[in-house]
Amino acid sequence: MKVNEVLVRKPGVEIQSVVKNFKKYGFSSLPNPDVAKKQFEEFLKVLSDEGIKVNLIARSIENRPLSYKVRSHVFTYNKQALICSTPNLHRRGEEVFLKEALKICGVKLKGQVTHPAILDGTSIVMLSEKKVVIGMDGNANVEGVKKFKLTFPELDVIAFKTEVGELNKFINVVGNIVVMSEALAYTSLYYKLKEMEYEIMLATEKETRSMAVNFLPIKDRRVINVPSSINKRLKKAGIDVIEVDLSELVKGNAGVSDLVVLVDYRI
Image 1 (cartoon, one colour):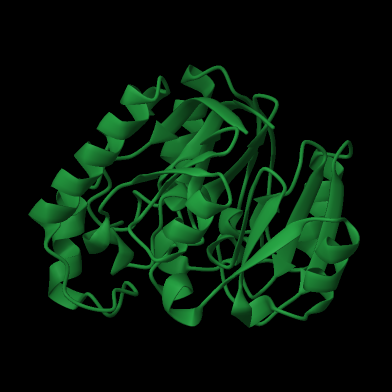
Image 2 (spheres, rainbow, N blue to C red):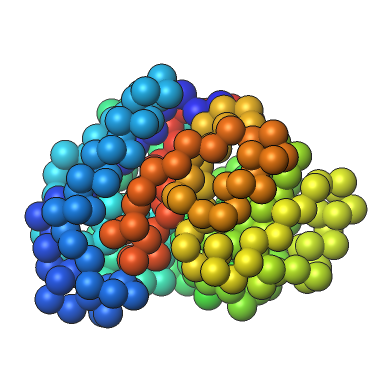
């Protein structure tokens, strides 16, 4: 993969409200908003240093403290976007500002997932230029998969039922290596990928919980990831790893790729 341009939303004043009730918003422990903002700025610097154009969504939504997790709301392909639908009611409405920003970035809005369809962007993982995996994991249903296929008929979709939530935190791809959480080991997807001759690297439960599978591939065999023991194995396999500390956002179940919408990229 080669990433040229992304769209992000910085954690702003809205993240302060997480402190009042962090468990409600899925945080494992109390985050430090100031540190979270600093870590995000350092992440943006890494993107810029890698030659990636970074577009910012300026408008904040004070009652939507998780709006920096932009991956949930959109899937992009060839500068076209499908606006997704998350089952998380407290996140509804965040996609409105994403739609506006995507248009400014020159991305065509090709479709939108609407009731009864459910399709969270975190349930979609690109395997290759023409192949996509969608996990029907509570964040995506059959109607959502149908909408995806209608929107992008040129893509080959592997859809499967799974009990893990937010598939992109359990499987990722760099080159011919599939990094997969051991929670998905020996499932139908595991054997399917084996048949497709991918090299599978299993991530431990601890590595999965630390959002280490949720890395962001930015160039051929080069990724941005949170500090993790899996990075040593990736490097041994010939993958360059740039580490960024996002520990305060990881507390809220967010990894690197959750923080960006890919505007311009190739696989």
